[in-house]
Image (cartoon, rainbow over all chains, first blue to last red; front, side):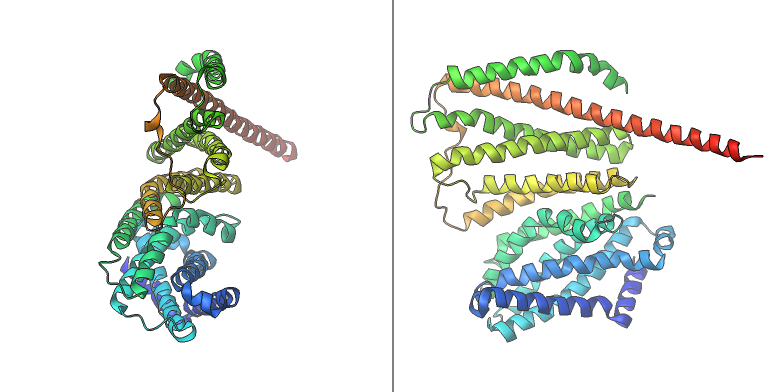
Length: 217
Length: 245
């Protein structure tokens, strides 16, 4: 598992393909929001802007994690490797998580610098909220990317598969971010964080167990 | 397929008539027997179909999840067809819930739609299983599609409690302009309870019959494909023989 993760991260570090594309995409979506909402409105809606931007940029990034192997024909090599299939899932999921976390940091900086939402009073709590939200998203999106990558209309299918089931993450992450950005502590956002954590655990475990079913030939 | 052989005579002959009779009785109860609700008037009569559609929809999604898990475990395509049929029938009833609900809500709540947790939950469920059907139609030619769909149905059911909790919390944080109705606990008249139970039986029978028909249709489809493949194989052999010297 660690070697798959190491390979993916090394590849990413050398090419910076996903990170640079996702970061540019995040900037563009943020700009679009700013034009659509006007800067005042975008500032008021900052938690919503943060998560909608991350989710849509993330959906495009996650697909790539499996395309790397498919395009280079290394997928069967990966499957033949002496690892549990669930480990491939976890490695891919963590790889996606790292890319999204970088995009998340850039996006938060931009929200502060460009929209002027004010430096978060509780950066650690904000980091906790964002980590929990991104873990849930990565787990769900990585699992379904393994499905969509093998079908024809993959770009269309992945958001269809992910978005309905992502509802708990969207609601809880946005509400928790709203509380934390307004200066509330982790305890004020406690109930949202608990639901997010439960979601993360359930989807990660389900992904670990069900992934094998998706890669059987 | 011994289970199928055992229930087939009943499901093909008795069940449709039972469902038909129960549905006629339910309609008679709803329109002729049950009294008007004092506050809401005749529009409340849609309740008997609305609530029972919701139960049938949940039954469909539950059957789909159980059958999907059995399919991944045992690999028997019967379970896959059962899951697919259950989602299709469940979607039908879920759509009926979403249609009958606003018809009732407009005169009673004064609005077609409100983001009450139950309404939000139903519409999210509808999208989850709509995607299931999209996935099935998009991946028709993929031999692995049954597995993908089963994974979606299982993850979907695992997610349902979380969706329910988060939409409840979400609305709980905001003041609700239109308060939710008091629920079925408000029923006083025994005739209303009789009507509800009769309609429940009618909808359960209708659900079972539709599920059976759909699963059978999918089975015949699979058999037809298998026959067509065999025919192709025979043609292929014949062609080889013709071209051979």
